[in-house]
Length: 367
Image (tube, rainbow, N blue to C red):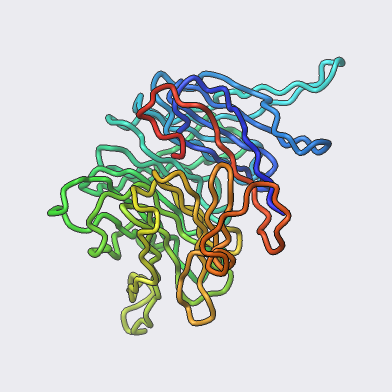
């Protein structure tokens, strides 16, 4: 049975990002009102309760992300004010109940332009954090001592030569795969070439090197995400642009004479391209097993994509704020849409959140 709930985030401006923690029981939202809110799931009634809200930056907050819980309750934010910040939850018991506050542990001020995206590295790589800026620079920081979050060392700086809009670590848990980062650009000029770059880290040279440019993606890229890899021989990358794309990156066999320091070569294949949104696509996100891709666009819909046994990707569901369309069932019922809370059999269980009313009619709240 479908459960659709509307959550008024009470932000005073456009909500730019929503991020769930590792267990999916905590949620962070950020907005142009310069604040971040933390939400906890109430076990009794299944409602989301705002447990913290504070001003984080002096400009619009573009993204918020959670670190792996092994390192504690830590989030990072990035903003138009050209900075990124690391925040840690501090819990105290005053005798009148447990109270939590979020403390700013560090501010990253190396960027000279707006910091557009931020993401923690997979746990296997330690407490690392990657940022990308509108100036076209990717910076990777590391906390040398995970018990002292006040110190973050800038380890690597990558010049992409195009303004950056989004970044994604490859979450593959296998040590057989070298660390990968995908970077997207929202440069509007098609003549500037491919807008997605793949970088690989070499443990021998201790450098990040560009190993692939997706030349077929020439439109501005607003979001991208590597799929979790639980045993595939190739990587999947979801891309949000004027449409939705799924790219397969298969490492090719290397000549042993090249030595272990040689970089990986990839066979690039476009597994799917879809314009079902009929408008700009703003976000893409994978499920935990990397088998279903969710996308959201200016049409006000979240669409779910999945590959069948022939590796053909298709839309399996369309979610709106007040209804859900199961694609398989819709074809049998002339594209009829079951209303929320309907009793029709076969509906997928899902939750869909409309975060806040917009402050301006031209704003689109589905970003």
